[in-house]
Length: 310
Image (cartoon, rainbow, N blue to C red):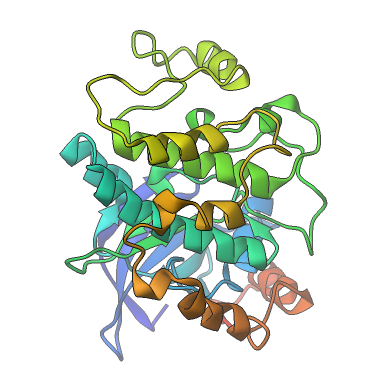
């Protein structure tokens, strides 16, 4: 831990505490998630390390290394100075359609890259999308604790995620394709940006999860009359919110949809994105290397060892 000095606490949750840290040598600011160490590493932490470390894309928070102390494991990541996208929506109430599209385009490109690396996120939500500090903020996907790799793991069947964002098939307790479920969660994220509320919650009884789940299963949602949403956007949402995952729009089809393609920034176009897909063959994919690194993080008793990103 001599490498980093604490600046301030930036968050907390079931996992532990997240702190803003500064590299003593380079002065670079990083985010570090501190997790209490036990005899064995938690399965979600293991997944986060192994899956996240293989993902190199501008719309995904950069994994840097794992740092060990006698009592804690620290996951060192890129620091996103702009905070959560959720906070931005809370401040604004809701976004104009063009602003919602700007962030949705970035979200889809980041998730598409995860899927190309055979990783499904399984907990996509506004709180897990961060922004950098630039004037035109770049969206960054974070928190891969519920992620699953089709290379390392079996098909998911557990019900994980945040109720408002969960796809119908995830609630069925049968095996499902996590990539299809991620598409649904992206749709919920888009809806919240446009409307300022969740699509399947009863506004008069928002804490009634049983009612929310019933609405998800029956795909019962509507866009309020006071919110202007174009017909092409409504069409896209109607293709995302489909109960049968086999009939739901795919990521590739979203990227070809007219609403998505409008005002698409040059760096998000397929030609530019291809550079990241080509590079993935050179970078270390989720493999025995990543597993060994995470296992070392779990078992080592050293006070300052580090497991770097590839």
